[in-house]
Length: 296
Image (cartoon, rainbow, N blue to C red; front, side):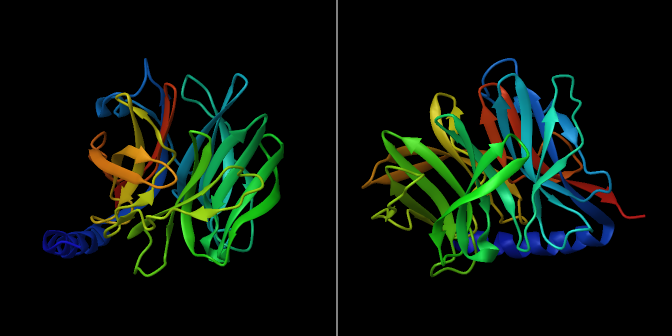
């Protein structure tokens, strides 16, 4: 960690303590259809908003289009269930949406419902580090019924695991707590030819990136300005302070290289204090953000 980032961390920590005295906060979701592919951050300014009724948590949002219907899967936190759980709602082009329905509640914390398709079936990798697993779930009745398929990895603390199929290989991006203080201090890659029956190999460069709370995944990789980018969280300012878009320069079974392309700040609303997940599919974008409101 550079001396400059150490100084900034202390300053931001002081700022956050002052804000906590004056403001309440809650995570919410922003979504919408763009006129074309996402190519500049200004396109994120005019999106619909979804807030939880009691200002609890709606976060870690992922988009799925199934036939002509559009869904957002996300983490929900309320005062009824002791830990985070996973929910889904359907969204419409006028900005309306259905009430959320829970899809997975367990006795350990769940978040980051990374939903993806393999052939004709939907699968999901939720964040389940509290159980020391990386789990794969299969949808048996879309979008509400899911069953456990397998543990992709066991006996490991890993968060926000995100698969990417690239040039005939499945790559699993994840942040582990191996030989580091916090999630996001390192990025790890695992690879296999078959994600449903995997024989995982660690990437020989692991950890492929190291730093200080800068490398935790913030959604699926996507195309941005004709480049394949990996969104990652930068929690220097606060947990979920902002998102970094990192161009994947090289990805193979033997080499990995990325470079910082842009930083996404929550400039769309002066009351927002952070963002930490973004997912882009074609011309649809969904992200989460943290909204401040004055204490009463």
